[in-house]
Length: 313
Image (cartoon, rainbow, N blue to C red; front, side, top):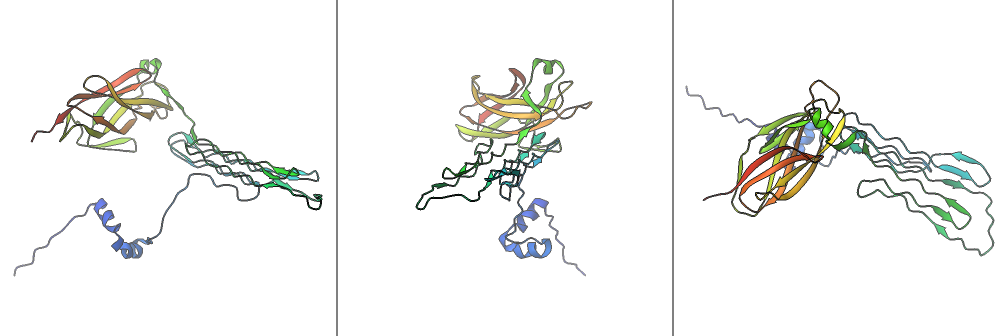
C-alpha cells in the first residue's frame, strides 16, 4: 500500500506575524488573540496636566537604566478678594517624558492662580474688557514649555498664568573624551561594518560582517550601512555619557559628513566594554577608499577603510 507523501512547511516567527497582520485575518486575531481590528495600545510618557482649577501638572515618566520620573508641578494660589489666600489645586501642564540611560522626566508645570471675587461694584453701563489667557504650549524643539498667559477681568481681577512644564534631561554627565580618559585605558576596541546589526541587552548580533568593499551600479549614489563597535572603558570615569562623532573622509582626504552619537560607560565594574551601533548615511561620488573615523575630544580612536567600486557588467 502506497501512502501519500506528506509535505511540511516551517514558518518563521516574523512570517507568521506578517500573515496575521493582514486585514483578512482580523477575525482570527479577534478569536484567538483577543485583538480588535481597531484596538490601539498607546503609552504616554508625558505627565498629565492638572485636572482641577489651579492644580499643578504631573511629572513626566522616564524609561531607561537609572531613570527617574519628574516631580509634579506646584499648585497655583486661590485668591479671595476679601483677603484670604490659600494654596489650592490648579491646572498646570504635564512634564515631558524622557527615555534613555540616566534620564529624568520633566517636572510638571505650575498651576495658574484661581481668583474668587465677591461684591465687585460696577457702575451702570460700565464696560469691562475680559481677556482669557492662552494656556502654555509645548516647545516644538523639545525644550521647556511656555508659561500660561494671565487672565484679566478689566482692571479689577487678574489671575496669573501657570509656569510651563520642564523638559526631560539626563542626570549623568555627558562630555567628550579627555586625555585623562585615554590615559586610563578608554579606547574603541572594535569597529566593523555589516549588512545587518542588532544590539540587544548590550550584545551585538551581526550578519555579513567584516565588509571590505561595496559595489554600486552607478555613481554618484547614496551609501547607507550599519556600523558596530565596542568601547573599552578601562579605568576611565564610570556613569558617564561619552560623546563621539563618526566622521566620513573621501578618497581625497576631505570630510564628507559627520554623524554624532553617544556611548554610556555604565556602572563601575571589573570589565566595562559597552557596545554601540549606528546607521551611517552619506553621498558618494567616486570610486576609491573611503574612511570612517571615530573621534572625540580632538582624538581619533579608530579608522575603518572601505573601498567603493563601480560594478562591472
